[in-house]
Length: 436
Ligand code: ACO
Image: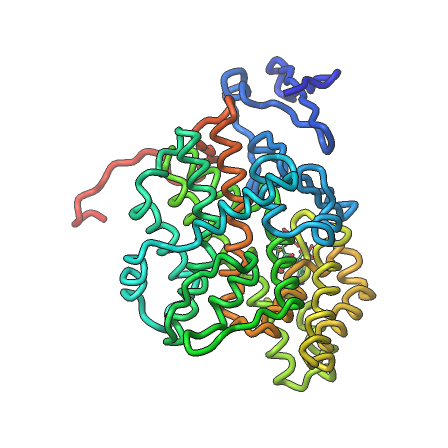
């Protein structure tokens, strides 16, 4: 880490001696104050619920400038990656630090596509779930269970194991997500086809049947590939931090990624696209565009508990660059499928228009996030709402594994152990039952 020219001095109003703290400078973005010796020097911890001001690691993978609305994977703007590269190029970039050369690209694609099948026994494991189980419950189980099937890639301290686990996870996630879907609808599983693209293969495993050939629609294939690229990584968000914290104990990569899947399920994180689409359908049921004004009043009323799902972001306080790309894809997909007049798309655009002009949203810097439009695209493709977060976890797997591997290779890495400000009862004696 590179020291900045200045240092920070922490002083106390009670006359305790002040403490100098080193400041480090990254390649871009805010400097950080190193507080690692704070407890030893002062006997105090810092207090930062939600880690709003805490850099928990150094990372060279993804950079977000929330004020500018900028997202870079390894330095490349998301807009360029989404228009000039495909998802597997992006995976190569995130995992290895560089976009592949032509030869590397062919090798990497081949490597991923040769690992798409899952152990046949997995389908019997899947059978233990209720048919109506939420796909995220199923996926959390299936991803965690990979560690029971692939014993030769579970040693997180072995770089070769980590590399194989990364390839396996990226290759097998589409198969697992499609299996979870097929199981839920009672259709036969479709084995992967390695002559198709990553996204094309997934579409076929989802919507194909053994009874007839499946033709991949290139517009939907591109749309899905873009969804994967846009969701591939997002620096130290809740699920990635979960994966890092979980992996910091030395657990195996499959278990750490399963923890990420579980975290992503929440409606404030990956579950937002599902929540957003449910919200749009609710408004549509209640009268559609005509009811938008009334709905917005509820959103602005603190006591209603209603939020405009797909709006607002912890980091982007200007615009989520992924939302613009997703809106473009939304237009393409709906046009391809002859759904230009889709009422939910119309409703979403109306909500966005009102919100962007409304003082409540303007003052709070609330803009549409990627989930605002991704749900409409997925629904048009035919993906059921309860599988949206599963698609997100499929796409984010590469980010999780790249971040996990970066952490393990970092000489500064330690088992994660946050501290607390204790406000509970101080030591007291247990009274006998009669005296309580
Ligand atoms: N609708 C209405 N009001 C909102 C919304 C929203 N979607 N988001 C934030 N606000 C309001 C808050 O009530 C708060 O108002 P106040 O200052 O009057 O109390 C203010 O804006 C700031 O909100 P915070 O919750 O402090 O913002 P934070 O950055 O912590 O939260 C979050 C970000 C959790 C994403 C929030 O905006 C939200 O819940 N959005 C809806 C869910 C969503 O779309 N999540 C997807 C995240 S992106 C992803 O995971 C891919």
